Image (cartoon, rainbow, N blue to C red; front, side, top):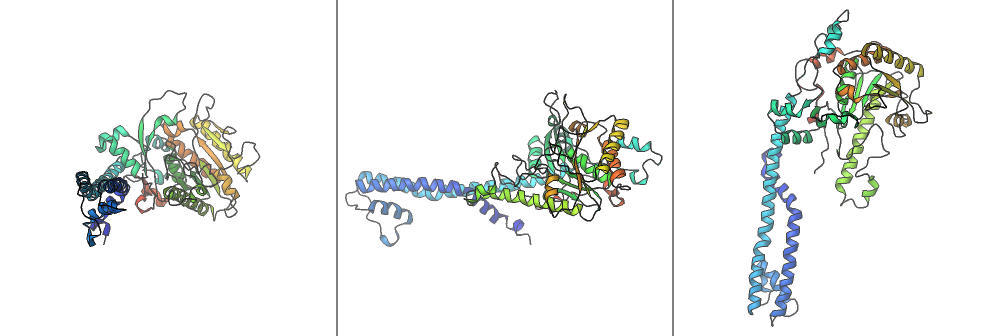
Length: 477
């Protein structure tokens, strides 16, 4: 039996009482102080009252004077006026808390009703991400002798994004409905396309909704038993990265792991450059441990950040294990500007150029050479081995190198430009060509799995979408 469903009244009362506790205590404090002041005044104006008689009478008045402990009722004119005021306070002592609880009860009911609406809006927003064919990729495949083969004969892809305006019209939702649904459910996020451009560029801002695949509390993990693992660490923040990396890995038949869920969107917990420990308000757990009752939520946030980080690293280790010289490729964006007009940056070293994350340099150099040649000749895109974006000391790949339990691996950071992943109409074709190059050099024969061809059939969203089964932490704001 679903007790929460059948005993909602009790749930609402509990939530209402919890919500009203602080206000109740504040109002009771005011009434108690007023009673104490009036009790002292009674002692002053009533000649027969001695010691604590004034306070005793005032408080016993609220209880109906059981046991007749209180002295006689006030006899002076001023004392009787004080009696009237205390009688009013007697009413307020019960009426105010009752009103606060009732108000909390109503708010809990309204919140529950709103959450039920958001669940319906969630289904509507999923309908905005209907899988569609891609003309650019199809035209390229048609130029091949076998037109891509049966495996690629009919493919439909989840849209990379949906504009807020289009969603308002198609799904019949208000702007507030879209915002509330995107904040409530972790597979959605609101983004502005201007964030994919450099500040020196003039661009019309546009708000869009993205949807990402989620089957883990931290994001998504797909084990295809491949030698290559594609890692997306910044999908929550970057425009288009989640979609681009997801399809790159799927079309190439590579393992895939992505961080899509942020515990606290006001303070992002980077998995690309991991701090030694998760923080809350830029402070470590030790700062809050001295007063655990006061900082319960802050400690809870840090604990869940650590839990997600541990789960991510454990899953990444599982993907790399059992493979001969596994390759870990971290993909994150860079933003082009007048001084940086390159489309792809390859990075495997620190700023000094001494520490590398690549062991098999021969294969790495071959990959870079083939990659650069294909991108330049076929797509007019340029790639460089970067010195502009060195690996920082807390880089994920260094973290894996230092972990003795993690298998020996080759790894590098690949940074496509944000403009390429967000605005280039060829982005799916580019992802496909990158996947083909990586497969040819690092994992010959790797391609789209037969078992996943059904994921490209007509439908809505990602096949790996299992958000409701995950224990995804939500901050109580």
